[in-house]
Length: 304
Length: 124
Image (cartoon, rainbow over all chains, first blue to last red; front, side):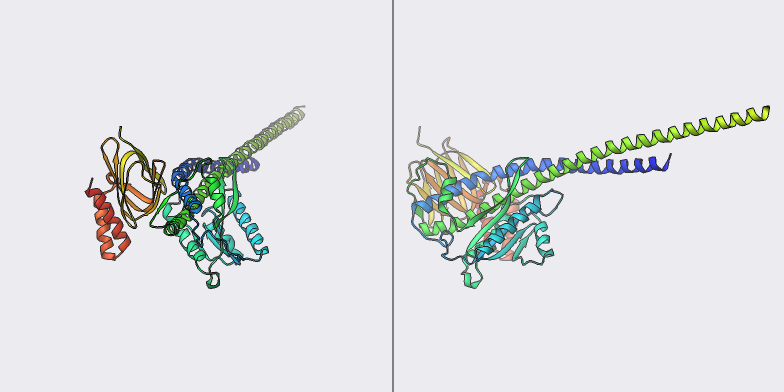
């Protein structure tokens, strides 16, 4: 076998192995998307009920709470960025990071200081490499987040917002995550979590429903006190789940195109290998023909 | 047919139980509260404790609920809890072990959680 042909054969073998790996990863990601989607759906009843309750307290009483009132001059914001622990997910992480950077730039243009909180090793690595300050970060659960993880993330954030700004607290809390729109579309979005805009919350609740006048047990303030942190946790939990589903969908898509590309590469390499083999054969034939002709000429010459 | 109310018991990551009931007893921060059909709209903070649901077919469902809210309006009652377990889902041995561990670690909240689980099981 010629050297050229051997090189092609070797490359085809290696691409085939890669293709097998990416194909497996694609299938794993596909099954995980389904699982993650199911978790998003399972968390929905709690979120809807909680939203209803928050709306009920927010509209049914005129209590003031630090988590619902806007500071007149917000000077400090916290940005929570959700990324994944592992890559191989196309532009998933870079889109999220880009959205967070745009948000940070916008907030800074408004004259606010920005504290960054990060979930996921990828985002942390990006910020650490650029030596930017990260207040707190979490990782290790982005593939399958649980409610306890959401609580862990929400804890310091709620603490920061409850503190006075002068003591290092923040006035606003923004969250950047990747929304799972569909299997093919995931978009990085940013939203303000706190202070709560009750009108927005009210819009999320089912329309055309007249909220009853609730009796609060023990009191409206206490209920709101207990309710709002849970609301934030549930929103963060939902964002974590969507982010996980989006990550798996992005991985699936990235691995699918990798598999397709590997297939294309194998086709073109086999064509080249075929051409090389054919060229070799042609060359061998012409060598044999040429050789035997020369031999025939030589023997014919010596006979005479 | 006796009056009924619709109960949804949901935990943060799943819906635990839903159905019709005639009486629901839960523990709020200011004491036990019983809700029957036609109760006035109510929104309260739950303590961790067992929740008893008397279903309309005469059965009783008991769940251990750890923190959360009770809200009632339009004959619909929702119990929101971060963690909620039905009494027949609770692993007694595990809860007992957790109780022992919590006692030796002096972890009051873990001890309370394990205690609530065991009490929910004891009444089933």
